[in-house]
Length: 331
Ligand code: DON
Image (cartoon, rainbow, N blue to C red):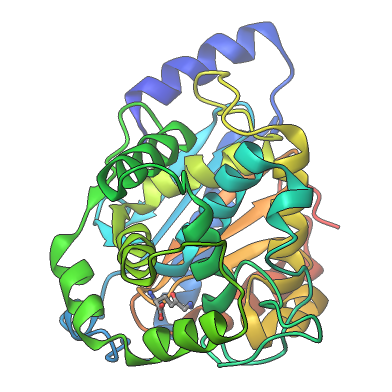
């Protein structure tokens, strides 16, 4: 589904500069072939520990691409809304990093892969969460979002910032059913938060319920594959939105976000993903996945059946290793 707006943007830019992917038509044809090839690999199962997620149609399958010069293409159910879940974490980290700076932010959370499950109750040797992309670290980062403001102002601010990463016509909202469903069943995150409070991980005077509510709200921000690819492309483009040229986060925040996505973004599969794919990525339990090709593009995949995307990537990479994708040379 070509977006008319971005097509006009692409044409305008093509007149002025060499496109990042010169043979765009051929590239899209290759990507569509791969998209169709791996569709049968649609194995895996829908997450059930958040009851509302268990009700998702497992058959959705989408892929969207956005280049750093605004070339966009989507396949399949690319306008089907889904909540970000953990894919919200790199954007929340980037937002807080841009606000507080690396030194203050990382006085609360480390930069090491934990090697453990995303929601394991564990801290590093400094009694801090290993990194900001596992639940422990993301809950701490949520406690730092505009921490002196009211809870409603904090979420409004975060949602506005998230919108800046995407397309101006992109659909981004909030799924209250998922928020309520998660808040009612999040024993693990409550236990994790009390454990972290015991070890004084939070900023002083942190209200634990407000922090968890904000964390669940951030995970319940809703968008679609088409818009999330633009959000990923903003990370690929050094923090500048490729659709309007606006800077959303500073360079250092963007660099640090991509570094952590590369080393920690796929949790206890991060090492395998870095070894087999070698690109910054972030998965979400709703079935969304973003991959960033720095200085080239952002990619979003959406399949509610979890772990089906592992197969997708193995197919993707074996295809790239066999051929240079027409128009784009992948390392
Ligand atoms: O806190 C949780 O468990 C969910 N809100 C997010 C977990 C998630 O997306 C795991 N990533 N694949």
